[in-house]
Length: 226
Image (tube, rainbow, N blue to C red):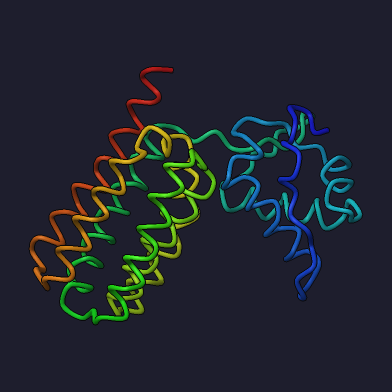
């Protein structure tokens, strides 16, 4: 077990092709993003290497890269720890997310066709079922897929690239509030689908802005309750 525990079945298999250091990096980043490795958790190289079935060297390299990117803190004489985001960090990122996704919603309303709408409907139904089943991991993953599809329908590659830079952290911040957002989040997704389907750019922008702001507010409320 890791210093504060790693839930059984959460360790990804390193079966995909590519450089080992890259696969170890992606595996650790996924564990952090999904909060299988929780903020503040002590990360021991030997234990991580054992769980992933690799030597310590690629783990060390991955931790150094994650430190550079702000996912891990390397503390002298103490070791590596999952970064604990401040409320200000989360607020800044979620505010930027609102700007990006509101514009994506507007462009999706202007550009999307029947195939795109069908894809959004399918993802929404999947997310609603995940909430009904209390499957938080699936709800978080489907929420990310839904927003990625809206971004795809927007058809702006620069906007998509910018959104991709914050997507992992949005998932990280969304995970602890996914259950609290629950059914309401998917009601808001339904409202967004209706606005995009009606090609109402203003309404789509307003719905997405309110939707992402609700998530930001819920994240901060979680800290206040804690």
